Length: 454
View 1 (tube, one colour):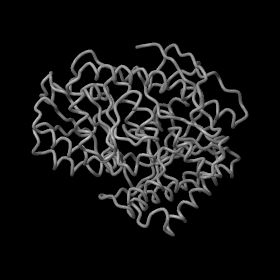
View 2: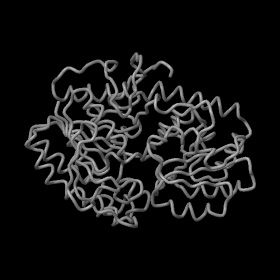
View 3: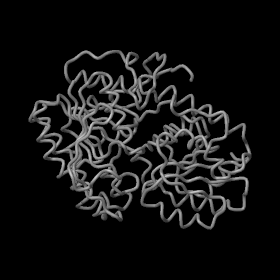
View 4: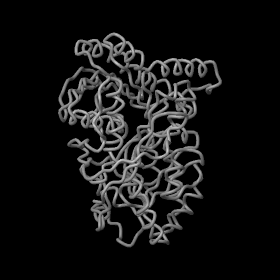
C-alpha cells in the first residue's frame, strides 16, 4: 500500500511526536508498504534546527528505507501565542508544493499527524484529488490547548474561540479515520462531532526489549557523582508550557535539606532556562541536555522514582509520550493527574497519583517513596507488566495496519505476524486477545496483549 505520512515532526528528533511518527513509518515500510513522509527540518525539543539541516530549504533524504521530504519552517527564538501560530502556518504553507509534487505518486492513504491541524486542508485536498483515503492521527488537541494554556487569549467562549473550535470540528468530520493516543482523547474527538465508527484508539508504544530494568546502577548515577544509596527522582522529557516544570523546582527547593534525595532533570524546551536558573544554587539537582537515543535506557534507569508533572488545564488534552518509557523501565512512577483523565487511569493502577500543581503533595509522595524501597520495587514491577501487556508495538501496529487495509479494501495480516522494524526491534511470542473496549462510544479499540518476558 502506498502511504503518505504528513506531519511537522520526524526523525532524527528523539523525543515527542517525531520519534513515534518515524517509528510508525519505519514499521510500515518494514512490513512491505511503500511509505513517504512530508515533514519539517528537525528542531524539537531544543527549538533550534539541528545541525546538518536548514530551516529555509527544501531537502530530501532517505532514512531507514523511508523517503523523507522536508519543507522550510520558521522556528521562533522565543515562543508565544502568535509566534506559535506563525511557526505552524509556515510549515503548512511551505509544504503545499510537496503535496502537489507527491500527488503524481498517487498515495492510497494520506495520514496527517496533529500537530498541526493547519495542514488538514492540504491533506484533505490531496486525498480527494488522487482518490486516497484520509486519516487524522491526533497526538495533541492543539486548539483546546492553545486556549486552556493561555497561548491564545479570550478563551474558548470568545468569538475567536468559537470560530477556531467550529473550524476544528468541520475539519475533523471530513477525515475517513480519526485516531488518538488514549481512550479519553478518542472520546473528545467524538464529542467534537466525529462519528464513533470512524475512530481508532492508537496509543503510543514502547519497545520493552530496548527499554528494560537494569540490574546495576546506571552510568548516569556514576557520572553525576550521586551516591548509590541516594533516592534519585528523574524527569526526562520536553520542558515546555504543558509540563508544569516549575513545580519540579519548587519540590527540589522544598527538599533541599534531604541529602539522601537527588533530582535529575533531562530535556530541553521553553522552560529549561528558568529551571536551570532556579536549580543552580541547589546541590541536590542535576540538569542535563537531551541525550542520544542510544543512552535512553541508561538514563531512565538512573531513576528510583520517575516524576511526571502536569498542569491542571492540560490534563485532559494530552497523554504524555514520555510515560511509556517510564513504565517500561520498571521504576516507580509518580504523576500529577486529575481523576477521570487517561493519565490518572493508567498511573493510578501502576504508580502513585497526586493532584496537578500541588507541589506539597508531590514532595510528600517523594519523601514517602524514598523511605519505602519495597513499595518502589512493587510499583516498578507493576509498571513493567503494564508496559509489556498493553503497549506492545505488535498489538498497536496490528490495529493500524488492519484499519489501513480495510480502507484500501485489502485483507490485513494477523497482528501477531507483524515484525518490528530496525528502530524498535521488538519481536517475540505474542498472543492477541480481545479486551473490553476502551475507546468508548463505538470506536475501535486495541486487543490486550501478553508478551513473553525479556
